[in-house]
Image (cartoon, rainbow, N blue to C red; front, top):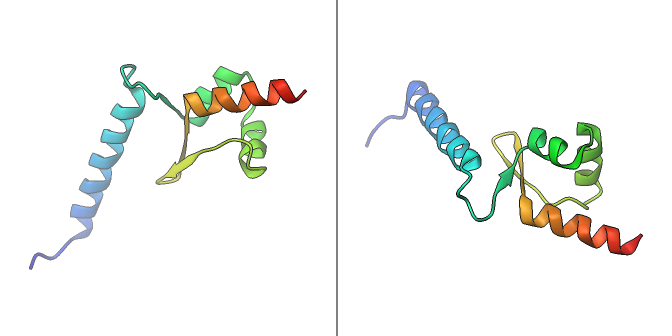
Length: 86
């Protein structure tokens, strides 16, 4: 049995964050992930607007280690549906 130390957990965390960052930033992903900053730029809105959409259950998201991620295709579908409702 191996004892897990704080240093080992910190190293694992750094590796995981690095892997996630590479995945998010990869332009070759078929289903691109967006962070809040990317989504604000894409939609031309503020963080509070995104937060309200999340809280109202309109905007689907995943939260990984405190960071929100949005699938580009899902965001696009939501706004296409909302446009049709107006």
